[in-house]
Length: 113
Image (cartoon, rainbow, N blue to C red):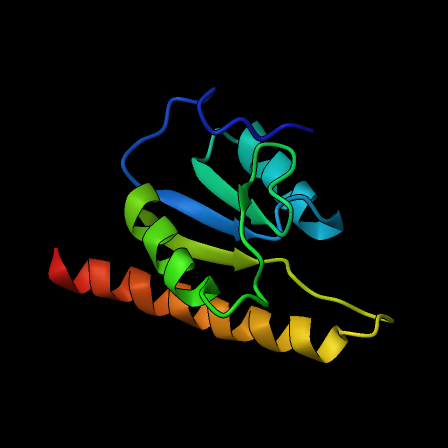
């Protein structure tokens, strides 16, 4: 599936789906698309119309905050995770750190409005 961010008419605020091209994330995106709920999705490689975001990169938190501000994100769904790989701990830990940064970013936006 292609989550072409430009193909939907979107109201002011969006849901952010972390891991939007993975097994769980792609299904979350399908449901949001079917229900015409505005969203933006990220993935490690930026495939299927998602925004490229490698959560293990040192600048991921900063980039995620920028995405939240630019896309006017009001909620975050984290569908990022790893099992049975050499870097499970690194990926899963990064997912938590970056999801927290996104959450804090959305709270800052709400409080400044």
